[in-house]
Amino acid sequence: MAIEGADLIKAAAFLGAGIAMGLGAIGPGIGEGMTAAKACEAIGNNPNEAGLLTRTMLVGQAVAESTGIYSLVIALLLLFVV
Amino acid sequence: MQWNPETIVAVAAYTGAGICMGFGAVGAAIGEGYTAAQANHAVSRNTDLSGDIFKNMLVGQAVAESASIFALVIAILLMFLNFQGAPLIKAAALLGAGLCMGLGALGSGIGSGLPGGQACFGIARQPAVTGRLTTNMLIGSAVCQTPAIFAMVVALLLIFIDFSRLPLQPGWAALIGAGLSTGLAAIGSGYGGGVAAGASCEGVARQPLAVGPLTTTMLVGQAVAQTPAIFGLLVSFILLFRGIPASESLAPAMALLSAGLCTGLGGIGPGIGNGQVAGGAVRWVARNSAIAGDLMRVMLVGQAVSQSTAIYAMVVSLVLIFVV
Image 1 (tube, rainbow over the protein chains, first blue to last red):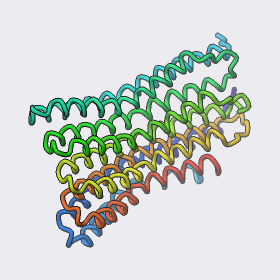
Image 2 (cartoon, rainbow over the protein chains, first blue to last red; image 1 turned 180 degrees about the vertical axis):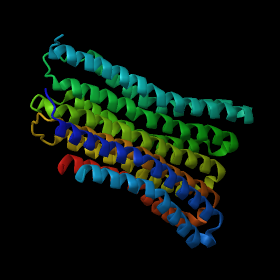
Image 3 (cartoon, rainbow over the protein chains, first blue to last red; image 1 turned 90 degrees about the horizontal axis):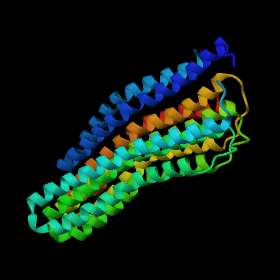
Image 4 (cartoon, rainbow over the protein chains, first blue to last red; image 1 turned 135 degrees about the horizontal axis):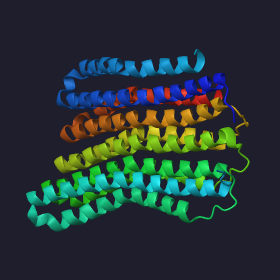
């Protein structure tokens, strides 16, 4: 079976998109989980500050999310632009 | 050198069996080791209860063992079923089945060991609630096994469905992708469910009166931790049952394989993360059950954010399957 160059490039872009988003999703998932686990513990310790703690948790998670969003952007670029 | 399809199918079946049992043995052994380690720790703390702790350890280990027993069953099926006369595409299905069950047993095996160990240690701390601890351990570790059961379902489908009407190219990639999707996604959900269940057993030992809210929080947390495995199962089913047009080019095949890899790998992190969130919430329900409602709310918000990357991965997979 002869594989044409353009076909090979498309195949590589598709595989790259899956690997980028798949591996890129691991870190934010674990990291945001740690953040939220500690936030639950902190709210248990000090329920009066629940609002402040939830806000801190969400901002921290948003930052941890950024690498997941980079992966998503790269995956979509590989799928539709490259 | 030319091989006939039968030889290649047999090679795939035996390779799949090896991968299946090899990976499948890892998780359960680690989980059971953790249970036994905690049991030893517990006996050294309270020697009079060694009988109860020993019994609980064995029950907990038996549940953790089931993940690798699933892998054993699939490996034996792969070795001894008769695939003579099967088309070449069966080779991809059998390799996918081995990968799916082997990887899928990892997380559930490790995860199920965590409640076992915490329950053993809990018996040493609070001998009066031994029965409740064992019940709580069994509920928690049963939920941990569901990702391994998803993997077994997909592996059995891959072994027994007749794929002779599926075109070889790109069908092979869809079948291996279907195996990888559920197998990999089950790792995170199985382990995450275990973290929640372990925290719940620890919590019952700390505050036996809070057993109701503890079990509720654990089950809700575990249910959310299971979702990445369910995404994996969904993508597997789409890959298995969606008719695929034949194509000689490489790109459609790689899109299908990549779709399986993406949801599978993408489910690992959110599964573990959601479990950690549930564990943290459960631990503090035991210490302060008056605010169980607040903790549940924060847990769900935190899990939803942690889940987002699994959803991105599923979206990319669906784009790979349906759009490009």
